[in-house]
Amino acid sequence: MYEHGVVLGLSGAFTSEALLRKIIGIVLMTPATSDFPDPEAAANLINVINNYFKFNINTQPLLDEAAKIKQQLAMIAEKQQAMQGPSSPPPRRMREGYI
Image (tube, rainbow, N blue to C red; front, side, top):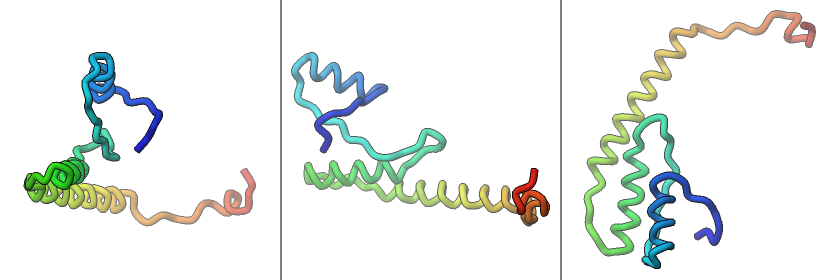
């Protein structure tokens, strides 16, 4: 747990409002990227909530979706590598440090 830091966006607004109104609250965060959805990150947070509050929220649909996204990203990466073709070594003068 961190004693100091900055929370931006909607999470920061909620946290700030709670502090101003003297409302006890928590913010749960997980590493994620804004480039594509991350259902696995959501499942991880739900598991924390499940454990803490003794809930039994099913995260399997999120984990299934995460597996599909990972598979799609792997296929895109393979296609991109295939389009680039085999990489050839740089010209001799570049290998030897000449420009």
